[in-house]
Image 1 (cartoon, rainbow, N blue to C red):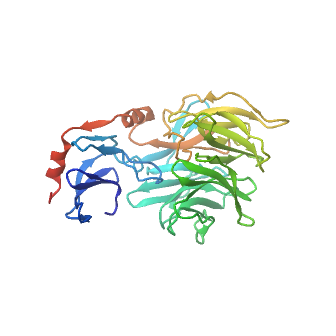
Image 2 (tube, one colour):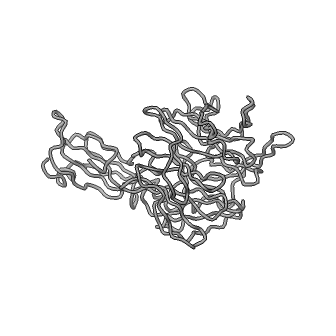
Image 3 (cartoon, rainbow, N blue to C red):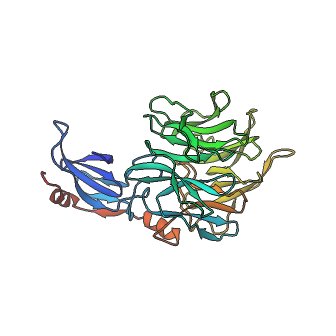
Length: 389
């Protein structure tokens, strides 16, 4: 069934699956493993995952006929959004760009452009958005599913994850659209590569390599000789989402602290690695301020804090301090799986993210997404809406 994701066989003899923010059902012969009728819409407004990393739809069906789901005006991945920024005093401002299902925005080194993923029923793509207002948004990619863009330090290229050749690999392409995308990694079957951060000299790309949903490591790709090596890993754990410091001498990343199963912690190590490792605080999605004097971290969904960092003459750091205003407007994600949803402006005064079009206060959207709807005796409605069963 195309498009479609997250299918479940239910006791009425149907496959129930998601397309966009809608649940559809189709009659299915379990003995013959065949579809025996046409699909029909059975429910609108079911939340979906963000960013194209999974096809998850937020619903479940019991064998006794109860349906539970998290509502959304459309899928979370397709909900219209705008680019916005939060300043250091808690002020919020939306940018004059057309609403789309933006995720994972990254600001160009000169601060004039933003690269962002979008996702809809046709797949996920990379767009280049002009913040000066002198040119229209431009779609950079078109083949396969493409997401999580990262600018090269010179602003000439954008690296991104792409499935255009069947695997979830990292490619890069000129930001002006000239030429064709070039493959940078070639993961084995079942492995997913996601770009995280360039070193300031453009010689190294830090990326997350996932072997399973909750198992991964931080790798380093050398652009000079195209070699790759593991930088940080922990057996059977998710170590991920690295960020180079502005001077290129440190690498921050998230992973599990010993004895804290299921809780992300932020670590900083020298680059190249020396064996030293500093545990900063609990949380994830670390990235550096442009002057290298602080780390921005995500303690959890809807939260954002900064940590003061000193690297000379020795490495030291302070406690996490919540930013004024928090994230009442910018959309946020738990740091457990997805890449970070924000980026720093080069001037160090603003943090860019995305905001929902439907609500001027993201706290309203968060409250809505935390509701679970229950429909009892749903099988009768399902049978009535699907012909042939």
